[in-house]
Length: 428
Image 1: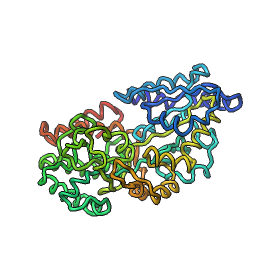
Image 2: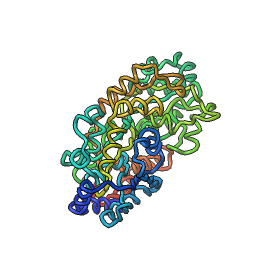
Image 3: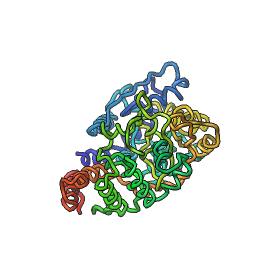
Image 4: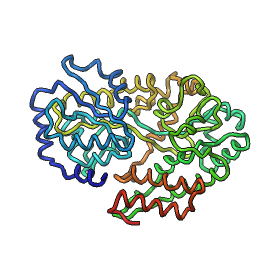
């Protein structure tokens, strides 16, 4: 079904949609701005850092559909394919996408050209991290979306456990002990001996490995398995067998329990949004007992991109939103200091990293400096439209191998079976 929908998006009528968007530029701007989202993250950024600039006669509608079971993408596909028939006040103006499926929408006529159609310039975009633009650049070199956040990631760890086992909780010193995978494994053994799990579950390190691949999941129509994916499988099986992880799955209750004050997990991989949105900050949490370092390899995880929808009658407003929320240095500094995002502006992040900014959740640490080098070096040359499906299927298939339900060979057979059902055009 995903393949069919993607194909429908790709062959949709460019002439109809683009003529609508150009007509929208020529006419008076619309009075209703429809923004399609999967959660309230962008809504909070919009309300806190842009809403005061809205014209008084413009109504903003956030249409929210949860990501679960692909519901958000399904809803978005439906409304975009009916965009040319929709009434002006019902048309999609802005929609958000994530890195895992961004290319599904980038290479279609449903996304406006950020420069030619919306009007942002190279100068406006100059300070954004390159990889955040590469993800949203189509096969013809056209930029189709922008973001206020860059999502380089690292390793959040418990200060008290580090001090007990490693003799220090200082991020710079802990980083030296975790600076490659062999050292990471050594610390995992020490944590196990002290009664702690190095990571919570099977999926925790997956993004680090998958973001450092040097081949795409698909070459032509053939599925390829990068050595980094194999390395993740080997490490996770070893960690499971040796008791270095707690045999949990990402986002489940037991996985999250390890983050609490009485949890027994040393650390979790994640970016800035993970620290703010996914780690508990309430009563019973380990608030203040965390710190952050880069870990064995630089990588990124996630991100939310703003796309202008072809056919919108609010192109000038979309431009101003993009300029304010993704290009304005002062806004980027404010979001970083007030909301904890690592924002998509290199000078802004260098300013915050050199400032007296402190994150109370991280025991007063200014963790922004750890992100800067990673953000500048992230390479997204090997992303593909198949990433979301492949990443989900490999983790699902290997989980049965990690917990001893199937052999590795059987797990690979199950992976290929599930992937070929999802993408019947591919081959082993």
